Image (cartoon, rainbow, N blue to C red; front, side, top):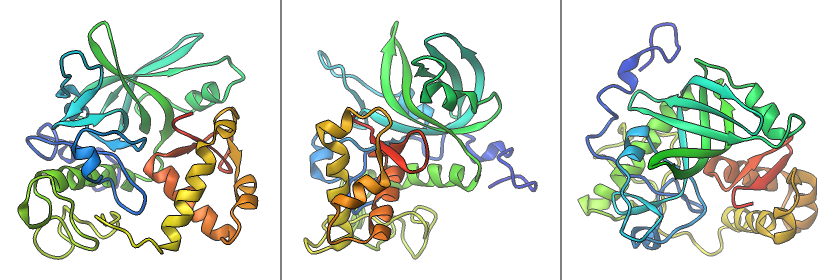
Length: 286
């Protein structure tokens, strides 16, 4: 999918306005990939990130009297995008740029709280023509959609670009086809979305989705307990977030390795993000 040099220069990766003629996405849940349960399909909302393309965002709909955005009938709030930076503009209170994933362009805005802030230092590492991953909220300004980012991270491994678009496809097909071809259903654990083993819609390294998780699953229990710590009001008030050691001291019954694995899961799924370094994290709801 890449050019022979191994970089992201092959425009065919994103050509044709995205992989699918009509795409949708949804958020994440513990123990699953980026596929939610019935509450999301019914229009509910959780705090997870939804993998999207710019084209999908441009086609988002709004219901009369409702400020929320919907893609294929599903509420969209926190999103994750991957693309190239263009037209970076630095000002005293914010930094903005256009993100191009070749399905379209969208403005990204990152608010800055002074030149000594974490946000300022983060945006100094972002330059034009660089590939980045953006986590943020969908907003409108002067009837124009944009993303207010709470994380902008340079991409150093271009496999992440491929992974993002595969995840977008996987989520879309989970809702439009699902298990046995039923629209809106969630595939069972270990099943690929497309027919056959390890098809392009169910790549081996994309976490498999599960409609139900056994209550005795220690990994899921660890993820939930760690997440609840980051969601506590006191934790949300800490600007730099919680250090890994602070979380470990409260996770009796779990090893440091298990806690660290749970934190990595929450970061990858968009529930928390790193702040001043790789050991400090904060909830995306903070």
